[in-house]
Structure formats: C-alpha cells, structure tokens
Length: 108
Length: 120
Image 1 (cartoon, chains in turn green, red):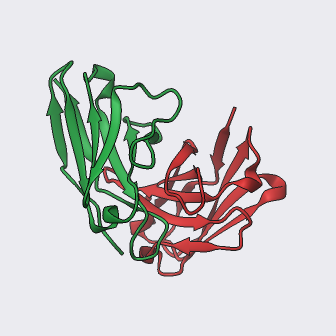
Image 2 (cartoon, rainbow over the protein chains, first blue to last red):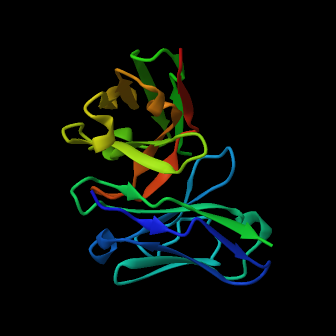
C-alpha cells in the first residue's frame, strides 16, 4: 500500500493564509480529498477531487495539486478553522483509500 | 436530509466479537458505496473497509488480517461491520462514511462514530 505524508502541525495568524500539504506517490495518479476534524466531532469533507468544495464549505478553502503533492489552502484563516486536517486518496496499491497522518492547524 | 446513525459499539474482552451498524436515511442507500474508518485514541484516521453499492465488491485494510467483515442490507438501508478476534489494537472510534462516486474516497457524509474498547 502507498503512504501519504503530512506535516504534523502548522500554525497561522488570524486572517492570514496557510497551506497544508500532503505528499505521496498515489497523488501522481489520483486526486486528493481533504477532511477537517474538530475535537469530539466526525470528519467533514472540505475539498474533494483536488479542488471542489462541498455545499456549505466557505470559499476560503481551496485545493491544488502538483506532481506528488496536494495542498489545502485557507485564505484568511478564521478561529473556527483550528482543527486537524487529513488528506486521502485512492491507494496506488489497489485499496480504495489511504489517509495522511493529519495536520493540526493552530490559528494564532 | 442525509443521516448516518451508528450503533453497536461498547466494551469487549480480547478475543471477543462485536457487530457495528450504520443506518442510512434521507437518501437512496442502495445507490452509494460505503466505508468504515476508525480512529484510535489520539491518533489519525485509518480506512479499514469498503463495500460497493450492491455489496458485490469488498476491500479491507491489510491491518485487519481477515478478522473483520463488511456487509450491507439495502432493503434495510443499513451497513454492518462484523469484528472478530478483537485485540487491544482495535480499540478506536469507528465511523461509517458514504462515498460520492465509483471507487472514490471522497466521503460526504459520516456517522457520528461509535466507540469500541477492547479490554479485560
């Protein structure tokens, strides 16, 4: 199975822009999705198929990809964006999915 | 409105079994692929099982070593996870999640999670 690598922690000042990255060989072939998880809550899909936002997700969230790296960008981070963020994609080894280890975002 | 309501978690002894359920409502359950994802205490998300909309195709994470079985009953709009030979490493919060497309790991609705604790 393949792996997706994320930085464990990232911080951003309130109102500034932050990029969270996800790296892995499967991203050369498959799209990344991004999930936000707040304490004691189920994950929420914030970006799917690289750069699409589900209904209800603010447009400050965007996704992009280059080579084996996918990125989630939050433009004008808000206090409520403080959460854990996970990327996933199809597994190039054949399984339907693999997750990154998650990035804890702190909004200062 | 789409809902996924989970049940069936709890405390189980090592070596025991447990069945989790996930009841869907507000959508045509038989038209969607479903997955189980788990999260050990203080850890990240781990995909563990997938089932196609008809139930004819299933995949499992290697870490399960054949101990878990995913199934569904489309007539009852329900998803199941039968867990056998449970060990401490299976202690986690278990989520069901609805897929958005064919063999697509973009999951737009999640259950509330159900806690499984394996301990003597």
